[in-house]
Length: 532
Image (tube, rainbow, N blue to C red; front, side, top):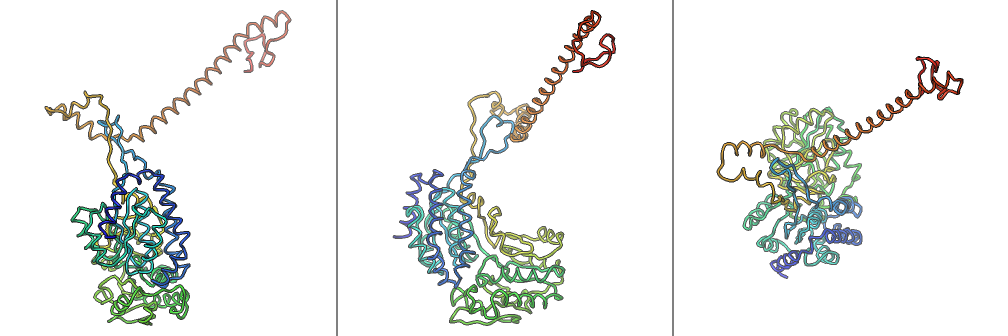
């Protein structure tokens, strides 16, 4: 079926309104979860053929986070989709004012090859949760994963609402000619610009999850051993083909040798003496990228690794030194197992080096000095900042994941993905009453009306705060009432006791029994006090 017909069918299906009920969305999300669970082996086999990942590695870095996102969406969907009350001004204090999330329509999701399941299906979770139809275009570079997705996903999801379109550049270009209500692209900035141009023809909003050169600064006073363990893991997982991998290290010259030595130890610990035969060390996606990476090493000194085999698309974990900002390896995002080290005089030069370049997807900093970390946050800009670890911010659904500037626009994960693929519709419902108050906005616009308008419109009213104050006032009034009741009971008891005094005295004089022998003092005198 042609790309145009696929999009038309998805739009017709969306226009029936079947995605509006939350129950339908939850059913589709549960079906997607069942797909991952039942087809785990098919997914792992495809990833193994595409990228050389192990089965356990596939679950850890592809499907585990995806399952978490789906379960979170199922659990929180009613909350996310509910009307969201907002603050009012005095003019609208009696009105119903809220934000109502509603579906955008038909979304195009263009996935990437480096994590072909996670970065393609996670946006789909947000699209389904928000009530959209979605055309899914997996990357043709990870061809085995794309084929499995095309063959098996329609067995679990609505075929009309969530079709999978495979193919290369021509198919993607044909898709981009169609009108969508949102385009979600994951990939590089060069293609991202082309996507944005195509979207502009239809005024279609876009989310661009791009990449960039994410710097990693190591403070000389931190625990270098721990820092290098975490950097080694974050850099070389998936053979360095991770958009948020540390792209290069910035450190002072006095610790460069120690950094190289510690990373070399960690490579051996993680991947053995021969990473080529180690099950958890993958491969470069294809020979084109292999040749690109080999060319990037020109002009730099190999400090660790450097072994390679073009026939296997294998490049060993490699550390480069004698690198400057003008080196070939610093001219583009590496996206492979090459880790350059650039020496700087300290944090001042590191911040300057970062700020002279495009805004990265993430900045990493390793330091025990919290003030230094906060300074980097204050004086730089990036999609995210992570101190003393790598990659793990991707696992936190409450954090928006996305870039800024050249590293992308828009964000997703958890509620952020739901909001990104929803229209947050402003709603105000007013009654046809209180026309006297409303008349101040009608002509003629006198100074008196302007004065009232200034008061009514500029005075914001926090209805939630007013409700809390009213509740506190109610509780205070109730507490005062309880205290008053206790005081009245006490007063009545005293009065009854006082009334009994004359009768007690009279009985005492006549030799009769005392009415209240439990008093204190002589009942026949003024010193007697009843016990209450």
